[in-house]
Length: 143
Image (cartoon, rainbow, N blue to C red; front, side):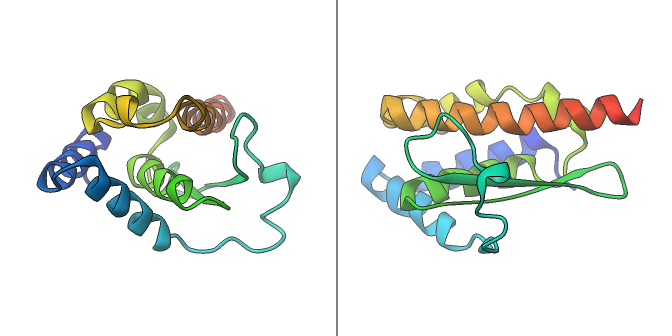
């Protein structure tokens, strides 16, 4: 499996092929359309991500091989796309790799830092905080 940095490079290359931010936004929204829908039981309080302006749910599933799988959804199209990016970067990774990855630098690499509103940037940071918290808990449980 490709490393998180390899996946970031792939994403950056895909974004570079697109011209302006209008095209990139369309691509991000399209990525969100490919998310597997969550069940009604998963679209509930225990899975809700705090700090997001829109509704965001994130499901963490530790795997038998020590990696973590993430699934998510939102009621906002662009946020669904941002979730798809996060899942592509983080899902299927070991907790140590998740914790070693610099998400803020990744967003800068993709050009998302300057392209998102303050609310969306805060929501994205909240999702990363949740993923990192779950990875820390998994790493602690494995000790």
